[in-house]
Length: 234
Image (cartoon, rainbow, N blue to C red; front, side, top):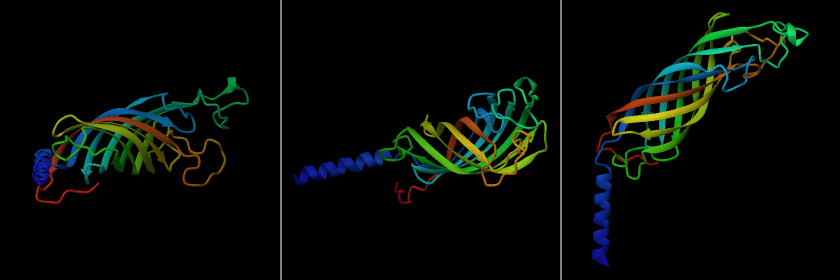
């Protein structure tokens, strides 16, 4: 029994060493493409007026489950008052046939910092024991959004992104991710119109605009973790 225990211990040690024959990487950098959708006074749909978006991604990995992502996104938002079911004093007549038409296109630049939590330890399985190439994840954070509507002045507001996604490790350094999130802003002028209700409002998110973002990103891992450092716990 003693010899068997020693043999099993040696086998386990060999497996651990083999599982860690690749370094853990601390950072990722890359780019992505996707789609933006406007949600505000003139539309609440997640699928109407979908516009293109692109972005740059930098990620810092604390360990296989926790990461910090900084992302800069450039995209477009589009909408109109044609399908709005809400009556607005300046854009809707007393009869549906008398509605005043309003449409807009906004250029949006958004920079966000989010915390990501992987439901499974993320890796190739050789860089970290029991790591998985595929994992779902959730994220939440803080950002700044600058919008330049076609019918208004450029405006800046805070944004609060949160959402979910999936990651797949294509190789030792190549990573593919798909993430969808909502970005709630503190402003009401993504569409170029402030307070179309004509009623004074207050509160952080009262009568404010938002947008959703679907992004497919490809990143490259770099900056290997020191092999002499202790393993992170997760």
